[in-house]
Length: 224
Length: 148
Image (tube, rainbow over all chains, first blue to last red; front, top):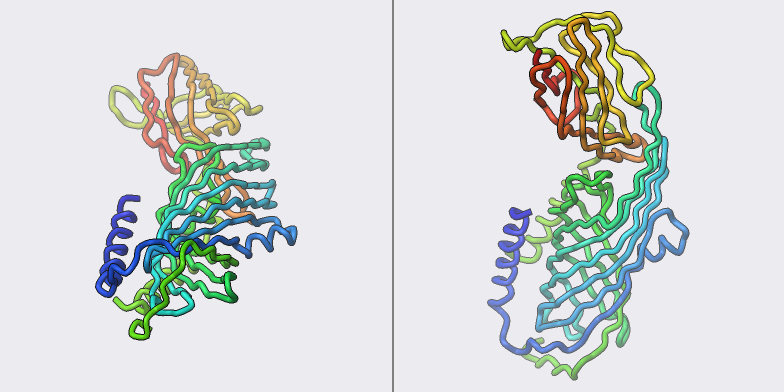
């Protein structure tokens, strides 16, 4: 995990280097908070799929930097050879994004950023194990499993009408950690995905509302 | 680096992860291999065996055979297995404690159990028992040596 954290620090230093050279101290006071919901998991859940979830999103601007938080829950039920597997849990991602469209008058956003994710989840595995001298029914339920991971993110946020926004986040997920001696080797981490996919990717599509916190000074003609 | 440069790096890393797929390769086994070692020569030694029993398994193994290695099953759903080796020169009882971990390889492949030896204790006519390899993955490897 430490090599990933080191790489992430280098990545962030490089990002902040490209950003700070053109940043003025214009304003690091937040002008608004965007809150929204992830739609792909929600549609899967509503469609009665065997996997799905809900995720809420919020971010807040500090100049061209955005603090982001994503909170969600997910579930998966699988029929496997000789048994069943189920997973349900909650996750939290915290991170920051850097906006590269800083002169857009509508505050549309193309960003790069990072997240640190944590999940708490439950896994159940029920299957028939063939020992070679008979079969044994393995029925295992492990609760309060904890995992963490890192993400590099990129995406867009577009203002559709006055307060309504849409956008997506593409994620490169890596550095996942799982317990070493749990009765089930974790198969899936909510918010991350399959544990043996390293690195792994993800895609979230959000619908959001922006709540203004203060009146934003319009960009000057020179800045435009 | 320009934003477009970062995007290309990101896309390449993502593409790499797309090609990394799980498979059905099973690296697990519930068979543990014991090797009999002569304490005087420190070399494998063939011994006469009347029979071997394993707790939880309704079968007798190696009945009236001679062997320097024996392969026996561990009992899943339990944290230990008891083995009894009956032989003309004195019986040996072994208590094997282990960690078992179920692993779902893939929905189509199903789940397997991975056994890791924690401790082997013994009573009877052996001088020493030693764990050589704690992860049980192949019967070709020796997991426990029994010194006689």
